Length: 335
Ligand SMILES: C[S@@+](CC[C@H](N)C(=O)[O-])C[C@H]1O[C@@H](n2cnc3c(N)ncnc32)[C@H](O)[C@@H]1O
Image (cartoon, rainbow, N blue to C red):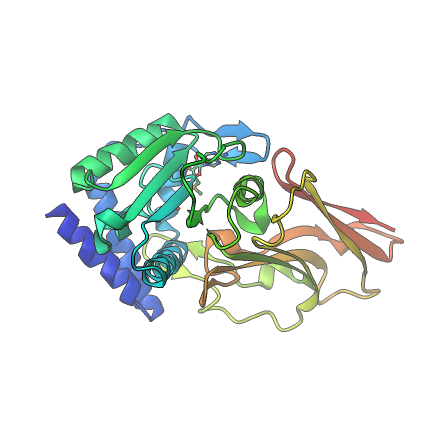
């Protein structure tokens, strides 16, 4: 019964169009997990690695409730798997899921939609208790006949087995403005091991610089019964787009690259800034193909405020520096 119930829910996620349909389908998925796995997940196993903080099992479980994130990733991954399977009707496909959390939310619900003989997957997490939970879930939901390997490892240093040629990688290990979590360090390690035609999800992460009034910007917040994001809020009219700081995709990390800093050019600071005093970063994702996650649709694409121009004097230019060597963070240089 559980597998059937899950299949109905995942189909409703894929078919959802309006915001209401998407929220309802994602809530059903969240209730399904909570009903099935009743014990609480550890909040004591947050792990610090060189590249960022891996969420605790409990923090990772909560991600399922970032509704539009969950729906958009599941839709994009469904599209990617369907494409891979139809592009080559003979071949099996290999999936690597880096940072699966206790529910493996972005892949397990989709499995019943595909032929078990055609998919193999490696699911990695740094937290052993998250993997125990995934194993429990696989048993409860009767997905044991799928070829799934669960591996406790750090995805920033993980070496993909030579006989496992990856067709699709999934990693959602990010926070807003690419701070805190190790998305970029994981992407760099995995992408350099992929063949040129493998798919990496998210396909693209874009970070834009703007001068604005942070408190008036649309911002995703979830209260018990409602989700408020940019769709209910008006865009702030005086926001000034400055530049796209960077675009992270397979090409960005396609070559050997040991640098864990990304620096921007210097940008002119406005002489008067009453209507846009804050230096802010805006994140958007292309998950796969036309499936996107826009600013303020989720926690991971919320705007990020770096500094207020009221706090500085006698400077005319700013340069931004993103450093993901340890806990990913932004800093700036003025001149
Ligand atoms: C934001 S949660 C997402 C969980 C789940 N994939 C989802 O989408 O709902 C990120 C997960 O990645 C794991 N993680 C973060 N950094 C990791 C690393 N360096 N190696 C392995 N797992 C990592 C965390 O432990 C956590 O379970």
